[in-house]
Amino acid sequence: MKISAIITLKKDVLDPQGKVIQQALDGMGFKDVDEVRQGKYFEIDVKENDPNKAKEIVEEMCKKLLANLVIENYKIIGTQ
Amino acid sequence: MKSSVITFPGSNCDRDMDVALKKFGFNNIMVWHNDSELPKSDLVVLPGGFSYGDYLRCGSMASKSKIMQSVINFAKTGGLVMGICNGFQILVETGLVPGVLLRNKYLEFICKNVFVKLNNKDNAYFKNLNKDVLEFHIAHNEGNYFCTNDQLKEIKDNNQIAIYYCNSEGNIDDQYNPNGSIKNIAGIFNKQKNVLGMMPHPERMIDQSLSGEDGSLFFKNLINNIK
Image (tube, rainbow over the protein chains, first blue to last red):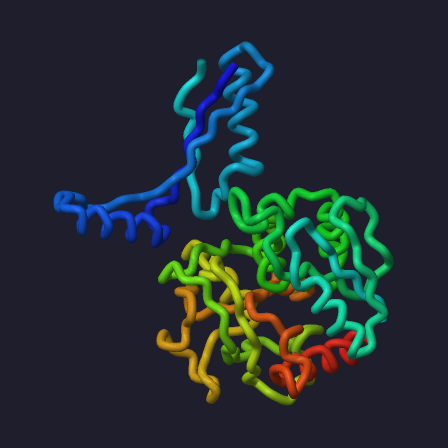
């Protein structure tokens, strides 16, 4: 079963990469952008077929390795 | 005095550290990341470099490697563990020291000499040093120290800030902050002060003709403190 998770920076954490992307967009003519925040997306294929158990496994992975909870949040966004 | 330098895949300051430690009298051993047992040591050093290619987050993979469990146990029983640059990033990922190191504020890799002001000398690393401002070298892309407000209060209350970025006179000001670190923080201790993580490289300042001697002062003093 494939679980998708995203990791995003917490609100108060400075995201210099997002800022530069926003400036580039601005330079390209996308003038309506207030803010860009960059994150990470993971697709993890686990052997578990029960969606709830599979989610739990990936959540554990997020807590222990994929996200640093000092600065990042994680969210399981899909199972398939 | 025995020291161990851990080599991770992608470490590149491990040999410099080995040279520095030996120059000032340590009997140093290089330890591979995939070993599980730490040799008997008075000091363990996590060196600079780009462990695991900085994948995911700098230091995150290395913090989970086999040897780190022994290093964490060593630190928790009071052993001296020093992480330099990528080693500092590894330390924050283990949770041995609080906070995290983000991309530099202006997204540049910074490679230059900086001055740092010692904030706390009541520890094995800086005790008896007769200077309060040292010139070290930095070379990093992710050295922007960040922590939550609660953590900042806690590290201040426990006097865990080790060094600040400053000018040659020791003035700590935003204009001497190379990477955007909160409060100009360049290095911090754990609560017990036996674990030190810092971005600057003392091992690059051990030869007058190549760089400078403030690293020599640091290592000479360190071995005397441990003896």
